[in-house]
Every structure is written in C-alpha cells, then in structure tokens.
Length: 130
Image (cartoon, rainbow, N blue to C red; front, side):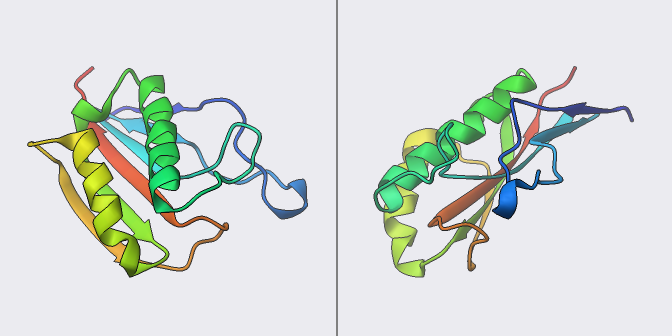
C-alpha cells in the first residue's frame, strides 16, 4: 500500500503562533483520511454564530481538504463528529442530511470538549481508487 501525504495551504497555528503538527489529509492506497476540521475561517478566526453556521463552515472546510485528493463528499465512507453540546445534535443532524441525503456514510457522533472555541469538529474518511 502506498502512502501519499496531501497538504493544503497553511495549517492553522495554535496558541503562541506554534505550527500544529498534523496533515490535513493523508492518502493510503485508495483511502483518504482527513484530519478533523472545525469552523475556522481562512483568517484563523472561528465562525460566528451557533451550531448551524459552524456546521456549514466545518463542512466547507472538509470539502476543501477532500478536493486536494480529488475527492468529494460523495466519496466519504465514514464520518466522525464531535459536538460540544448534545443539545445541538438535532440541528446538526438536519444540516448533515443536506450534505449526505438518502445515502449517508457510516457515522459516529459524540460529545466532547473542543481544543478550540468551536461547537463542532468533523473528521472523514473517503474511498476513491487511484
């Protein structure tokens, strides 16, 4: 199995401007593993608004990372979601259905405190033969 690290743009910096040690996506054979994405804008600020605005921004960021590997949401086979507040689940779920429709991938969704001040983090795995 071959492994190709796929990177995009600048990885956001953490506290004190320190570069974060991760790749936005890694291809291993026919699978593309995307690191968790949050509702961070291009300028490094977190998207204003509640769970709806943050979910849409997070999916936009997921789509950007997938595009680096010539993938789209149609290629996603597994999604892992972390929500800061379980009360946001039904709003998140409604938006999730807009992106995946009638044929959603496998999914896990759990509550977790976030490392940045976001309400949601989404990680995906895509399958797209080379």
